Image 1 (cartoon, rainbow, N blue to C red):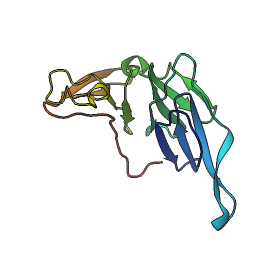
Image 2: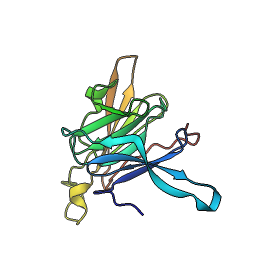
Image 3: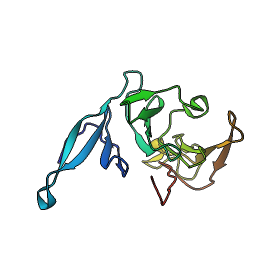
Image 4: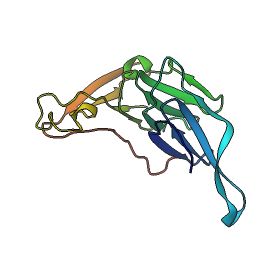
Length: 174
């Protein structure tokens, strides 16, 4: 058992064989150390780091299915791309201007298309007065590649649904 302030997301990384965990202020990597039944989950040094001061409030964690060297980290200020090899965060990755919105959920597919959920409180929906309304949305945005350097944003608005996070699953994840 480990304490991680504001723990909000975990992701198994089959390439690195680590469990990434995102907290309010940092991204950590955990690995299994030891033999057979004596294995223990251990924080791995040299992997993961504090979130940039400009992007506090770690919120969601997802793999970059188009490039196994990267993870996407959402915060209360936008979406960061984490380079596992260099152990760095970036805000200037491809199509960042299209997806750098503050969001509660984020995912992508092999083609580099994105799905984004951003809380809006459900104003005008049947659930706007529910206790969970402040951290949900009735809208999912899709950013679809239309060329090497262009994307189009499309919106799906549900009349009676409340979304918190959005996921794109890939059965052969890395």
